[in-house]
Image (tube, rainbow, N blue to C red):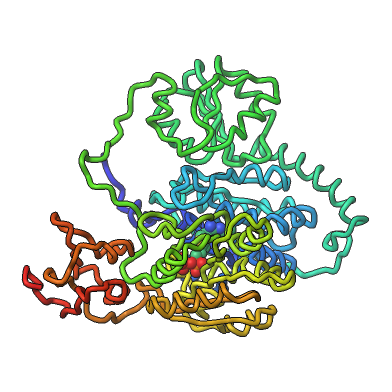
Length: 591
Ligand SMILES: Cc1ncc(C[n+]2csc(CCOP(=O)(O)OP(=O)(O)O)c2C)c(N)n1
């Protein structure tokens, strides 16, 4: 095969998220705003690298969507980014922005996580879109990610609606070749005062609701001829209706099948579906997550074949091939006999000290989402619940109201999560005279999603310093009279502060403040175990530090290449068997 050199000049390997950022830049966005969440985070992290685009991390997705709504109202194009659960938080503005429509193009980039690689649940964003009556574009590779984002801005302005671009983990993170274009910035639109369009009170909203229905019909008519939706006729024996990454899987597993590929999948183009179904003998619907398309196909009186494919988890070419009796697609199996490697808090993680102390207190811990959720796992086993961002604070109060336990109930929440949705929970507790205890784990970063800045750490998306909120002052302003700040690497001090806090009859906050071990540049020298002093009691092992294990005899061993010298283990060893060593010290058998 002859390879044209210009292919390499104009095409670049990009992840789907990189391509989305590029597409938004090419579409002339003025602003990108969002809240981190896997698998969407890199979109904004890439967009900030382009010139002439203002990017901002918001404290949460609702605020991001509202900022985006303002940019749109002001007449400029804007991209708002989040993961699927973020759209729950942003659902309130979205559902009414669908009524008001837009001025400048308003595009939501929402990334779903089938299989829950990095999420607390699985959701199909198409359901939200259907409920809000906004269109959805579903790219199946990076080239489409770029093109569909550009297209989404055109659709937004042509049809006067917010548009969702739905990504999934594999489209977001896989790299495929992309032919990039140039940036074209549309002329800013003038803002014209129009309360009947933008002030959604009942009298105005009712009229807009009629328009919303009419707009959806126009969108559906458009979707029947939109070039994002195409019929690929091959063998007429089987016709597959599909969208997003599932399209790529179908092409690999069933190369002879005819396909109706829906790039603009909401609203479902009924006439196109009918036309396709009439041209094939059997229709199958193959989609990742919910039977969203399948239900609408059925509603048209077309009965798709029962594929037996699950309505949850990730789809794969192998699963599709198996479901259709097609030639098997080999899947690489994990090597036998590998030791299990459960996820653990990093060596030197400051969260560990807090959970060790809470374990000692036998506290019931209503937790939250962040790196610290790992404290629920052995050996710490120090978290009792994790539902959604911010939930732990209200849940601790609810537990106290239920009077179902005599153990102290403590809410634990990270700094980014506190700014995201902990503030209002704490306000509820203060307002309702709770005597509970809330621990804010201030590790100076949003660690879980890759160390983004946040309003507590005071670092902007550009990496520049930004105003940081003063946690002590904020808690006091919300009505919390008892606020303590501790260094969680000092375990005794942390334990004392927690015990004192739960003993108080008033609402108390303990701020556990120490930077994430991964953002600390210089660490103290590592520690090692003195073989002669170690009694094999296992106290240090119960901290769950990846640097500490046992040798065949049961004696503790510290891997000095992993140890960052936090000295938490030193504090739990009652036999002074853990001693500091130089970084390159050969501790051999003697120590
Ligand atoms: C609504 C929502 N948005 C985003 C996420 C992704 N997410 C999970 S935890 C987290 C923040 C964690 O930061 P922090 O609370 O500071 O804890 P850390 O990881 O630093 O310990 C984010 C952004 C999510 N799960 N839910």
